[in-house]
Length: 90
Image 1 (cartoon, rainbow, N blue to C red):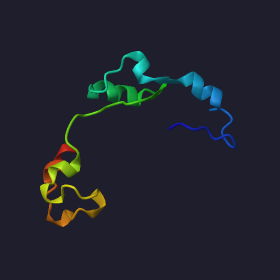
Image 2: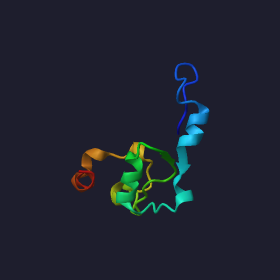
Image 3: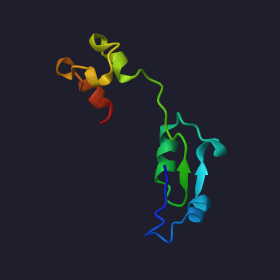
């Protein structure tokens, strides 16, 4: 979500945001291309909106059979080895 500060920021106004943002889907962006998503995310000349990257994999709670069916807040993570999950983010 992008929102201007009408009180203190007189440069990045609503008009400025309209002129400097674009929708990724309007430019044929492929949300499965991780490198393209990163390049668009660091582009400082224009601000993109939409889905930058989407990975098709199981949700976390689907990988934890003992906790299946429980809300995530009720999962007992003390009995779960999250090493593989953590390695995916490193």
